[in-house]
Amino acid sequence: MKNNGRRLNQQGGFTLVEIAVMLVIIGLLIGGILQGTELIENSRIKKASSDISGISAAYVSYQDRYRRIPGDDGPTGTITQRGAAWSGVTGGNNNGVLVANRNNSFNANGEHTSFWQHLKAAGYISGNPEDTGAAAQPLGWPDWRDQPGCVQRTYRPESLYEPGTGGVCLGAGSAD
Image 1 (cartoon, rainbow, N blue to C red):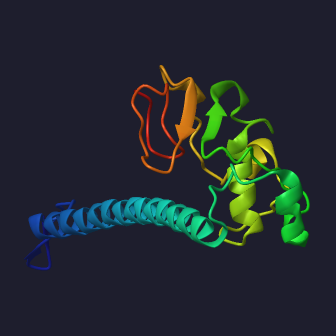
Image 2: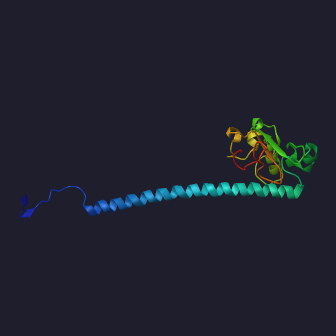
């Protein structure tokens, strides 16, 4: 077509340069999103690692201060004399072994609940020392009841993993 001596171009759509610019922009957006999710995942891993290190430090500090294993420290009459924070805390049997059976993982039975109560009462980790059962355990603590072959978790100070005991200590991983 001609209009006053000029040809009108009726072509519609995008040029190759415009399409290339759009592809670059889309690529940058996708790259930013993927990088952001990677940063979030890395921060979760760092937090979990920090939490585990904090529990380990709390355990060692408790042993240094009281010369006993948290959770196994007892009897109850002795530890409740330490102050107001200890008033609702359950004592262990002070035999040098921290035992938690699979069947009482999330109820108030067993020294594993006392483990967290003792660390809280001593001020090494945050939370209410009078919590029992599942509430006594730190948030996000793994449920090891469904791990195959894990019937009992036993903790002795000399090792974190004891083959043949039917389980592993708190936080050491999966069963045999």
